[in-house]
Length: 316
Image 1 (cartoon, helix red, strand yellow):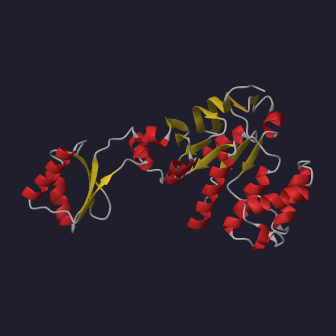
Image 2 (cartoon, one colour):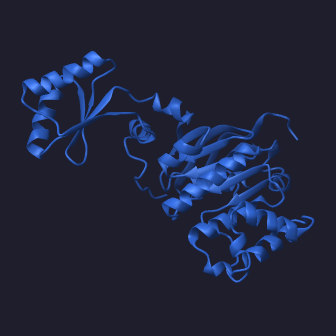
Image 3 (cartoon, rainbow, N blue to C red):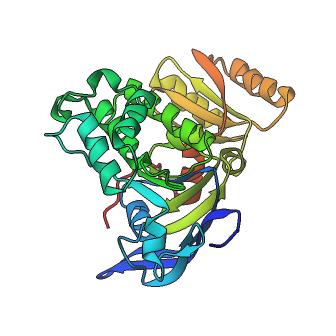
């Protein structure tokens, strides 16, 4: 096995389905023991990328290695080092949680499957439900069991394809804690998500995928530095005031209208420039009902690079 510090290396991946280019020259590297998020809207190509890296789908062009093994030439070696949790929990509803875990442990030839199941049930806070049929579980419990099953055999790399889709806020927060704990133990996590806050919260490195192309790659802070800072968000009492303020301010600043009677104004850095903004509003007898400084978000980055928000749905 290659002793590189990279758990995953991808170079020039391309994939087409009939006339649609799903992946277009995609390249990135994931360091071992880190959380990597592939972020993009539905239809961006995230699941296609994960299917190629987990040997479920061949690429048309390009190359990829996982733990130093080529996904096309050494698929059995790759599979022995990875685990995949897809968008839908792959658990048996008829079996109990314990039986699900023991079954996977036996299939993977793990010694003492009963003890393995007990340890994972305790780790994922499922001990009290261990002997209940999985069909009685909530969505969050099923998801935790699904990830617990994926840990059997201690895989070096875990692929999580949109792991929190459909979960309530409490279950989602619990899943975030689980993912952080896995990375803290040295496991490499490859995460696909369409949730900007999830990538921001979890990932050491983020790649923004848009229409099959990586449009940016870096830490959350590095990506946010791509958009201007010094933004102020103003909220007005009514539409007339907002329109008057927009007409006045757009002569001096970059102004963007938002929802709920809001204006986002790029005033630049420095207290004097911020004060100047409010002097102009005062002189025009326009007083905002509320205001706040607006820090750059990943959504701002996505909009700047693609012209659309990450919630935009695309078909492929």
